[in-house]
Image (cartoon, rainbow, N blue to C red; front, side, top):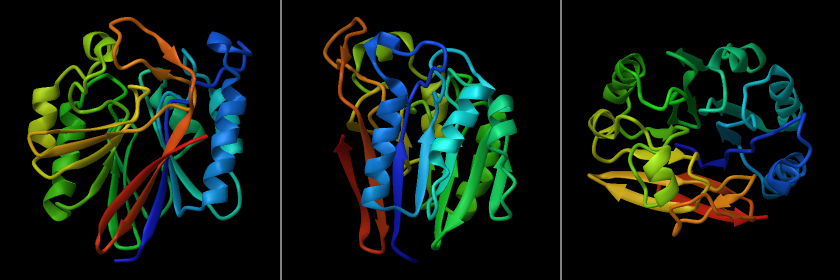
Length: 242
C-alpha cells in the first residue's frame, strides 16, 4: 500500500446571510484552514459535515465547493446535522468511477491501496440501511478507515454528550466492531477516545471549539484541522491549529 495523506476538516458552519455568526468570520476561518492544508500538502481532503451554519443551502454548498476546488487536491464531503444529503449531493455528486455510493450520502473509495469509507450520520444515528451497507464493506475490508459526522459514542464533552450525541451508540459500537478507526467532527473538539476497541478521532471545527469542561455551550475561539498519514508502519495523525 502507498503512503496516503488525508486532510480532515470539519464543521465550517458557513453562512452567506449572517456575516459574523457568534462574532466569527466563518468564511475566512475556512479559507485560512484550507490555505494551511494546501501548504502542508495532502492526497485527499475530507470535510465531515455541518458545511452550513444552521440550515442547508445549495448556495453555501456551491461556495464550499468553489473554495475546495484547487488544482492537485481531491476532496470528499459528508453531511452533518445542519446539512441536507439530497441538496448536498446535487452540488457534490457521488459520480466518480472509483466511488461506491451508499445509503443517504455515504461513500466508499480505495486510494493507494487503502479502503476509506464515509458513513452518513446526518439523521443523528447510524440507520439500518447505512449499517447493512457498511457491513458488506467491512467483511471485505476489515482494516478500513472511516469518516462520520457524529462520533459513535459519547466522548467526554458534557454539552455535546448531553444534548447532541449519536442516538444509537450501542448499535454503532456493534456495527463498527473492534479495531475500527473513526474520524469524526460534530463535537468541535480535538480528542481521541477509545471505547470497546473502537478509536474515535475527534477533529476540531474551523468555526470554534466547545469547552470540554462546561455543561453549557462555551465557545473557545480556535480553529484547526487533522492531518492523517497512512503508511505500512501504521497511522500517524496530527492536529494543526491555524
